Amino acid sequence: MKILYFHWAFDDVGGGEYFANDVGRALNIPVHSIVNTKDNKFNFIDISSHLSPIIRKIRRIRTLDYFTWSSVDVTEFGDFDLILTSGSTPRALITPENVPHVNISFSTPRWLYDLYHWRRKRMGFGKELIIPFAECMRILDVVADKRVDYYISISPIIQRRLQKYMKRSSDIIYPSINISEYGTFKYFENDHYLFLSRLEPEKQPEEAIKACIDANVQLVVVGTGSLESKLRKKYKYNTNIKFLGFVTEEQKIQNLATCKALIYTPIAEDFGIVPIEALASGKPVICSNDGFPPNLIKDKYGVITDGTIEGISQAIKTL
Image (tube, rainbow, N blue to C red; front, side, top):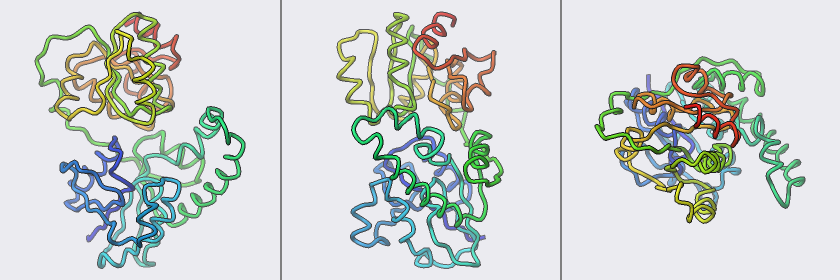
């Protein structure tokens, strides 16, 4: 089959981007995207030239992604037997009537559904103004959903969300990980904990930081995101906390190999590749009691907490 594959963006690289890259390699096809990255390990094609000048200017505004993708004419790429997309907004593609559209869902848009009220209550000015805007975005999301013929989920959590919010069924294909790459660094274990994730509110980096300060243990924070500058400024004089920012793949594997344990406590995590990387490195994991990670950790490979500062602190002491 000739398959044309689109992934929403490669500017903010996370688990979804690694998964999309692995899908492209498994099928021996390139991954097309509207926003690029300079990291040459990703096998993608930038489709900016297929966008109009106006759309090209707004393509980095995530809330306008639906309009960006609906403007893409897939027939410009040739004749294909199947259109494959991953991420929420590429579902807005308008595909030929005789070509099936399959979407790999990393989640229904969390800021519109399961995390909507959690995020809204954290807002300052505009807290109430977001309500009609979010309703309009949900209408766009439902319209995009109707353009998908078949869904693939990355975990039972996502399968459940699709059924709950979209009333759509799906099959599960778990993200891939080459576990042989981990545990290869033979360093002495340091007496510090590791937080490895995007620094976004739902990942709860500050809760992990405060818990480590409360438990008086060292924490190395690896990752970037919207909270990075705020957290660096707030905790730059605290000797328990060290920020590394973005690290290479080799540095990431080294950090996993040398830590005491991983702290990974996001809210209802979709899947979570990082805990698997930690387990492959022989390290226990402190995780939240919701989402997919507790299905991996159980009572055997770490400590499950309620994700609060007090809960994480107690888990550190228990571990």
